[in-house]
Amino acid sequence: MNYSFQQGGNFSAQYGGCTLEDAKRAHPFRSTAGTRALDPLQFHSRVRANHRCCDLSDPVAAEGSFLTAKVGLKSVSQPTHGISARVSRVSAILSLVSLILSFYLLQDQMEAKAAAGVLSILAIHEVGHLALARYFKVPVLWPIFVPGNGACIVMLKKTKDSFEQAWIGLGGPLFGVAFTIALHCAGVCCHSEWLLSVAFWGYSVHLINLIPAGSLDGGHVAGFVGRWLFVPGAIILFLVVWCAERLSVSAKILFGLLLAHAFWCAASFLAEKLGLKDAPKKSNLSDRSRRVVWLVFLCLIYVCAGGAILANLQTEALMIRSLETPQTSFSQDYEKD
Image (tube, rainbow, N blue to C red):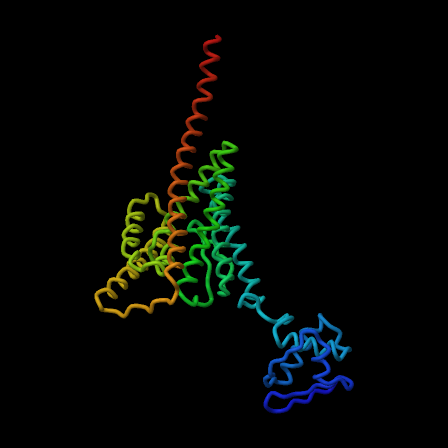
């Protein structure tokens, strides 16, 4: 096997008398575009990387293997979703470990089945972010679960514009609320108090997450539909934290960081309006795109608010019924005596 490379990107490779042009004509995925200069070691590594897909003893198959690797059709070394395979595996392992640790710590605060339901909502929520990020071809790691404080994903690259950022932010609530509705329906059909309680928790957490403030999912939406929402969003988030009771130390730190970022975004918007800071460039997207995002955003808020109220009422009704049933049977036994 003899390799000969020439300057300017023109090269020839001969395998027992079979030239590169013959291999191009014989292979169905031949490349018609111009070739660029390749290092001999790079050429050899690409051919060896595709050794699993073809027999290198066949000159035409070997050349076809190189061509498909060159045009990106069969490159086994190409990273998936912009992330190398090793980084993806490490991220998946860390995600699984954090999930198990969160489940272990939540068992001290609630029943095991309720902890499983809560973590399942968080997992589906983060999968929604992951799916939308990969749809827009934004490299993102697997979600990391923070014990007692939810979960998060890490994007390795910024989005192209606020439109992609808004839809990636909406992906989590869309998936999470849909799964919460499924748990709610299951709780109603099975008359399960713990399922209704988990559904109420899911609605409430998503409703708070949709507040248009800072780095919350609602804040990502506000960056696209209207940055003026940062001001009321920061105030609403402050009132929610102020009215919250029995927050752990880690939760206080988390909400403190969220509040700081929320008021920073609100102050930046006010500075832009006062002329103290340059406003960001407006996107070239149509108003229809904003109306669609607005509609999805408002629908999620209404569904979460209505679902939380309904789930709470149904949970209280089941609790009252479970308390009245033993008393009724006891009174009937007393009358018989």
